[in-house]
Image (cartoon, rainbow, N blue to C red; front, side, top):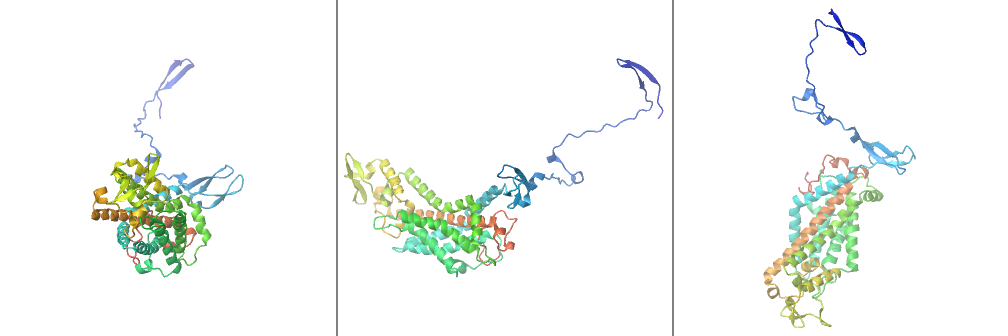
Length: 440
């Protein structure tokens, strides 16, 4: 390229020459795109189709663990539940899934929601209606309800079995085989769970004009029934169709690995009874009827007047204390009496259903005391019993699924048919949404 003439330019550093270009090159202005974060990166070839390339998060393929010596180690995500060697102390360190707690909580909440909102709730309501009607059978109502609970317990074990193997199974036993299992061990465990539930709540210590109530024997029976028998049923029903049943010790290791899920599952049954008791007690308190139900189903107190204590005297179905109608006394006296009777093992949850078949109530005159005639009073007792059974059976249904989920989290480690597990499924469909024996 030919250059033009030059001219001198004097600067502080000395003369310099500037060459004049005859044919300058014209540069086209180009627009400069602003800086975009990696989240905005996109594939130019796929912009027309609207697809976007998401940058790979390399940190998600690694799990950080800390050794007992304090050394931070990085392991691959496929090494979860395996052991790696520490670089400093050379000890073996187990790699834990950092998101395991969130996964467990999501599975538990989804399974509980499926019971409450799914078709299984209809089965629970029907079972509760049958149980309420059985309670009305004179003298034998409680034990007839225990038989129904025994049948439900067999279904309880099958729910554990199906949940632990995932939401999809090729086949299952029929309804008769489910309700009346051929296995003696399964039948015995179901019977023990039914008797251990009915006996301490609705029968133990019941007598004429005395409601059933808890004592040390009842608490021991309930503890064994609601803690150990569910674990035994979990193991027995899970080992049913395994070609190579896992050792008992492998189940113990799983229980230790998921203590929170196990505790929640075992606690939901007694918690449901407490919720029902507090709910009805609060409702009776707000409506001003707590004194009546406390005197009707719990021991009558001794009222202190001056320096003397006066027992209740029943006149036409109304308790009187030294010729004073109980309705003229401060309601706080009977509210404290209710709380004191709770401390001694009495409860409305146990007393009202049992009164449908046994003469345990004190037979107050509801029409004169609170203005409720006998037919409507019976309806209230039936509705109370139905509500109690719905809460209790729902708690057992949720408990069975939660116990099955504890095994499902570790299914590859305790054997079983791997094809029966649906790894892509993050929520469980109801176990009995379709008849057993058909495809789910």
